[in-house]
Image (cartoon, one colour):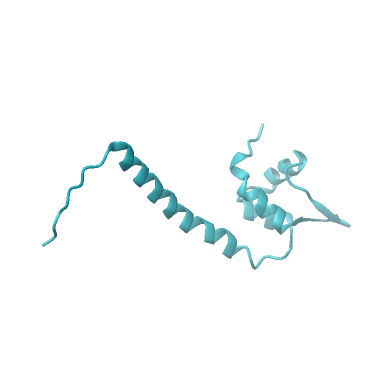
Length: 99
C-alpha cells in the first residue's frame, strides 16, 4: 500500500517546480539530438542537406540567404554552406521571422 504525503506549498512555488521540471526534460531530449545527429555530416553542406538540417524547404533556404542570415559559398557552379554556420543559425532559428 502506498502512503500519500501532503505538503503545503504555494501556487507560485508549484508553478516554478513544474516549469523547471518540464524545461529540464525538454532540454535533455532535444539538445543531444541536435549535436549527435549532425556530427557525422561533412563540414560543407549542399543546399538540400542544409535545408534538411533546418527542416525547411530549399526555397525558404534561398530566402534566408537572400536576407543575409546565412552565407553561401560557391565553388564553380556548386553552392555549399558551412555546417557550423548552419547549426548556429538553427539554434537562433526561432528568432527568424519572414516578411
